Image (cartoon, rainbow, N blue to C red; front, side, top):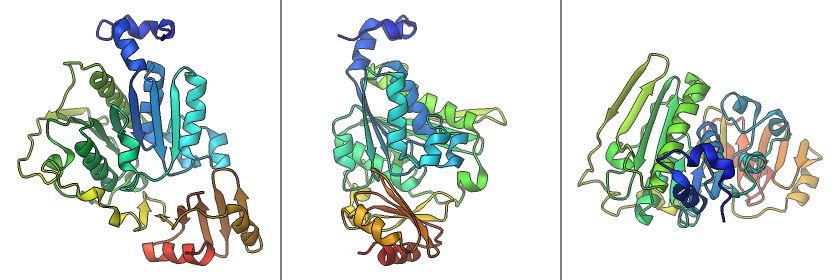
Length: 333
């Protein structure tokens, strides 16, 4: 039985109540991306008593993350802890009564259905269009609601997508590629907090079947105090709504992915790597740090972080080809 006492200030709210609080304890949410949006949403949902949170992220904590990624601290950055692991460790100290499942992995066409099939809601904490189109495809295929969030500079946007309405491709038929990112334009941490809080609130409304759920596309500029919302109609010709799940095509999984504003690419690899043996070999040509989660190498003009599944983030490269070359030379495959 759920101990409601810790949620007293929430369960007394008449839109939730004791029955709603018990329902939240039985609910399951996946958060894709534990960055600026994901960490805030995860913290708020954990504190709200959502019973299961799957925390999915491919990356590790760096010092520049701390300005806006609210669950991390300097020790996480110094250790280079994977974000999913660090988030789970901090959340366990906040609420030990819920189940937390950190997943240190890229969210891609191979694993998207597995990671979302058993949850009630998916939250978008990503920073790129490709990931959002993939979330949209898998959630539409599995009839799962998901909550989009975006933030850049002082401008944010939120929209909830339900199985019976417009999807992300109805709103954005083609991938958006303006070339701007938080690395070049910046982002207010107050903005990411607002966006993520709206996402978390929408998630609670979905889980509780609230009639107050706003299904419009909401935008706001915190700096210039501009707020707007528009209705989005379902496009009868939308490929996704008609069962064409292009972004679930696994053929694109192996293409190196550029990481936001970092001169870094993720390379999928070809399977598990013997990290101990590789570390021993690499120590003769550079600096190596090895722990249970990853191997970090710097030397010979190259640098990368290698994960146990063979995936690597190759640093200081300007192209996908350069990233593949570093991977082949130092890791193999």
